[in-house]
Amino acid sequence: MARSFNKVILVGNLTRDIELRHTNSSLAVTDLGLAVNDRRKNPQGEWVEEVTFVDITLWGRQAEVAHEYLSKGSRVLIEGRLKLDTWESDGQQRSKLKVVGNNMVMLGGRGEGGGQGGSSGNSEGAYSAPAETTSQPSSTPPDGDIPF
Image (cartoon, rainbow, N blue to C red; front, top):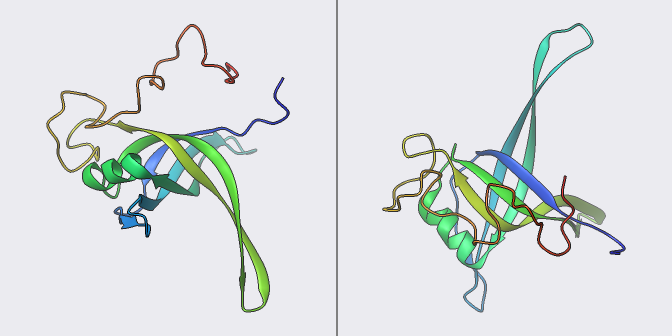
């Protein structure tokens, strides 16, 4: 059995347009902001909206596709892992928890914040994650995944 497990699945809306960068070795990378909304009742029985903002990093082709097809407000599903970044600023140690995305699925159709264009017939968006990661659960989970 695995000693640890680090997996995150989020569905939300982009908080800003995507800016694509490249490393010295020409590998594409982008950082995007995701707003994840939750609605629940407070102790007084009133519905309260709670928004959680999550920073996500995408690499390679995922970053290029996100830059090409997504814009602020686009709805996406991100599957990835948590990563703690640490650095020093003004003599103080700083840290930030973020998500490194492994798979991305564009949600919503055209005109629903699902992107800027494309010619795919996919109703969920112009690009979806590789075949091994679909938006519908399979009867047998991939190795290492825990079915919930």
